Figure 1 (tube, rainbow, N blue to C red):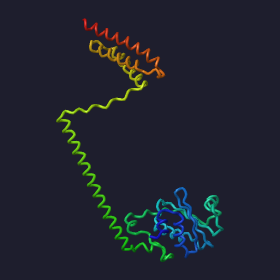
Figure 2 (cartoon, rainbow, N blue to C red):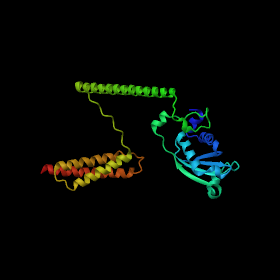
Figure 3 (cartoon, one colour):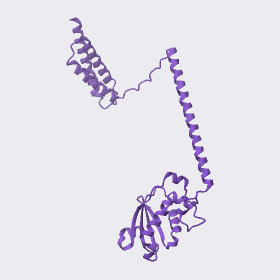
Length: 280
């Protein structure tokens, strides 16, 4: 594959046009192209309308593009008009007034090449026979390229097997180390100390204090045993401690201090209820 054919296959518009112009030079047709909005816009120009016969041009260009198989290009619009002076903004011109500027236009969608065909039928070089259509050369693949492909496949399989073995070995090694660690902990009764918890922020302390207070108040509505009142007293105490630990920088610090005093009084009342039931 020569450099121009490779660039055309990679989707470079300038290379695509060069290949198309080489293939269509015998028809007396010149082409230009712009790739915009995921559509390859082609402009075919000739000296007279007879050279731009629609069926011939569309069939020819479709065959050339599908043999090139340009990457990321599926949709193509083929426009035709009588040859004019070079225009840098030709696409804008024909878009604004297609009826006046064009003889005809046709939208086509290129077929995706089969993966097997991509591998075994690379785009041929254009250097030896520039006027011969690319499609005619696709049937013969040079023997060195076949050998290179076979070697690449074998090398790829070998690398995959090697990576698989390495992965299996690493997995087995990790499993073995984990098993030994568990055995060691069981034998010597090693206890793993839990990681220290991060201190609560003032906002979190305030929120948890309110939550405990709500739970204690709700449980106080239905409590009738000493154990239940002791648990309620403990929740009021925890809520009061959380409010007391709120930082002075906290925006609701004053509210937290007031609730700390209130929750302690509620704790004392719950404790008193528990004491009364204990004396009965």
